[in-house]
Length: 118
Image 1 (spheres, rainbow, N blue to C red):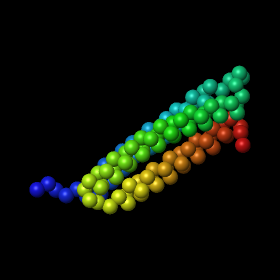
Image 2: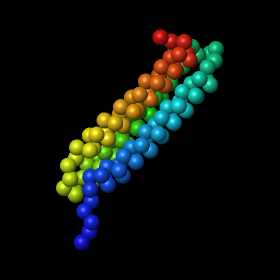
Image 3: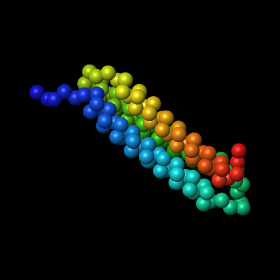
Image 4: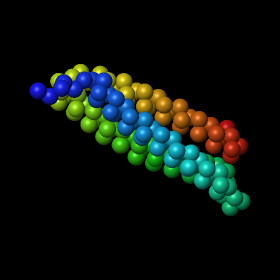
């Protein structure tokens, strides 16, 4: 007889995936920030650069959300398939988005400061 799968096992697997996605998101948003800082020139105003940075960051966030939602959907499927409660999916979702929001806020504040915007 196969060993019963637990919520903790499933949660652990998907928590690891979300951590990877979060780290990837943060590294990509850092790259976008570095690119924006490196692109400063006289041809483009700092506000234009900042707005271009925000557009790229928003596109990255959208792509990231799609991947996270896919992982969370798979997690819910695994929990449901094993007749387990799905509450942990919402816990992971909340934790992931709280962490990403902090990273986004931090990089946005850094960018505003770098470009001398309020």
